[in-house]
Length: 421
Image (cartoon, rainbow, N blue to C red; front, side, top):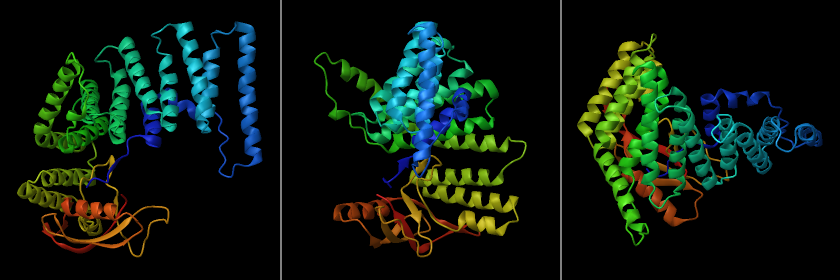
């Protein structure tokens, strides 16, 4: 199924930045005058706040000069205000000047630049200026390298931010060879995981985001075609040598992806089982993820065994028959990762997507082995016959977690899906 979308950036990216960096979380103290109705009162309040910030800046300039010590912080506050009110062009201008003054007053390597660069990244992302996002991430990584040792836990936020950025960059298809983004993301997630293991041990619950990120990028590495033949090669062969080394690593990871995925899922299960209070639903979901993993790799017998194990595990640890039914009653389109949207949803009742959303309403039978039969289009607002055909092909080729009842996999007839190509 190729309609998936990575959900590790956008608005989620800013929330992730806040959770990794307490300085950014303090933005809640910055006034915001967003108003859904765009009222005149809201506009007046916005203008008043901007004028106050600008007056503060002018006052500081008159006292301290154009490079005064306090100007950077005031410009950062103004940029943050612009940012929270969706004025990203103005925010970027303020952040750039704030960063310039911070370097002048505190030195080229000062850690004080970090929150400014992070805010710059967020506004560049909102403007979809992806090259600038990439450049600022490189600079941010350099700052961390200058200020912290390789094994310092302080590096965890930047490793996660970089890993998520490479997933976003991959989804944008920015590079001539997209697998380079996946390789960089793979490395960054592993580095983040190792930092946490060294600090807190291999069973700490804080490992879950980086383990899940590693699993997703591992799957994408395994399923993405290498396009290295499209790259331009310099006369001295330098690019050829560099790309050859990268592609060698990518090929190695592709070959090891099945075992690597099994290891990552087992790690996630071990983390859940090591907690003071075990969440049996989470453990069951992860056991189902293991079964899905085998099925996606064509290991049908192993997948069926793990589906049975997941069912019996939850049945052993709960008397809630409704929960068991909800967990196993419906087929699931694969892959089914927490940080990926497959671009599909089950049709409930007479539900229909909004008129401005392109969709295909499909009907299909799912065998007990997770394959599709009798795939048909029930309804669609697509005008492109080619896209409709592509949806049908994808549905036929996709893998599906089968319905499970009493520990047995059973076929499902006429499952209804909305597909959003």
